[in-house]
Image (cartoon, rainbow, N blue to C red; front, side, top):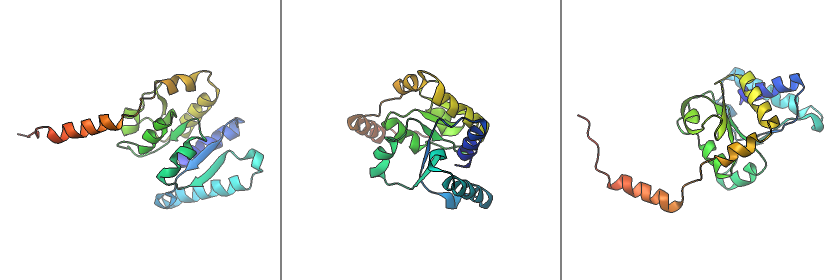
Length: 176
């Protein structure tokens, strides 16, 4: 989250404020003490801004039954993880609702999201690169529609069941 908040700060300093960020989820307790203080300071500063100047909303944790309502409020889903995620459940949630991804260019995120096809990558841990991707997402004509059109359709329940059954009935591979 701190990479995203730093990107927001860079964009604000540049004078680009034609966007809104909804932060959904919790987990600040897992951040290091310096990062937690940075996030809390940003939240406090944002709360003291006039409502018309606030760019970031902190919505807190959510349950599965609220994913659809939260996704309905956004155009893009930003996954600014500094971890080498293996799968990235948020990517699946976003694609389920047709939202292109802006994500770090590492690990499972970069493997699942194809840069310039169904989302955008930015350099892992680089707030300036994320700020550039956000500004591009907000200003480039036709980008959202092109990336949205390439989002993979979720598998049907039947296809998932067939896949699981095929794995179950497959002969085990032996190392040797």
